[in-house]
Image (tube, rainbow, N blue to C red; front, side, top):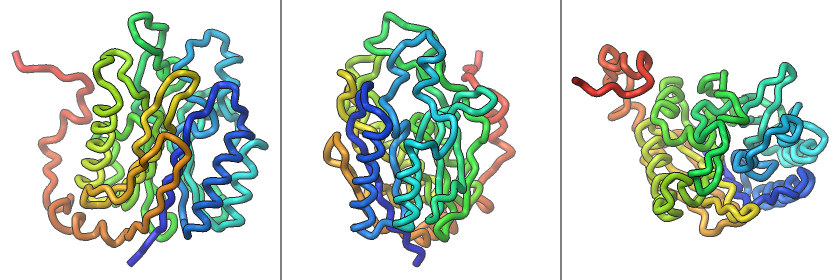
Length: 308
């Protein structure tokens, strides 16, 4: 067996006024708890260092940039890297990245046990809109503040296995998992900040949103025979609720752990990477069963075009 003890570190709300240092202290507390429970890898949410700022409409670029990290680790986050190295624990978390040449991405990183960054992913499937929309119950301006990721869906060898990353809305798209599945991915780690109510369909509330969260994660895990670790930032941020429901899902698509609260909460589960082999060698043996000659529309067309 190749077992990774994984800690899904759900985080409760981060208010707009909270500084990075306050947030990092909470992340450190979760990391110490994970160490006490024997974790090898800790996974934090999307935009783990700040509130979900795309809900705010901002025109001042300097104000926008204040939510972004210009280097990783920076001074505020350095204690997290130092503690992880002390604990010999790998980690993954999301943040807003401002590159030296001025690009803005919704980013996640993966480290090894010595806090070396071994992987970087930039969110590909950006939801929401670009301009203020008065018809929405709340704004979701990721398309305003971020560019689509430019790194694709790479995977990395880490902790004795093959690990990939995704961020939030990526989990809803089967292509996300399949591209990593075609690279033999054994574990996908992802963070999310999902509003509890659909801003364009208010009858879609937290119960249905949690259902869609489970559906997306479980299907991705099953159809690619891999573990998926999906970690929320949850609770009410400055009056705006986010769902929790962090999940650890096995390669059969079964939930092995699920968060019960909307606050800081740690889920720890042993994840045997060898459990991915049966599915990869049978029903989802891609080399034997896939028929790429029929899949051309997936990469040649974006929008749907019905027959006349």
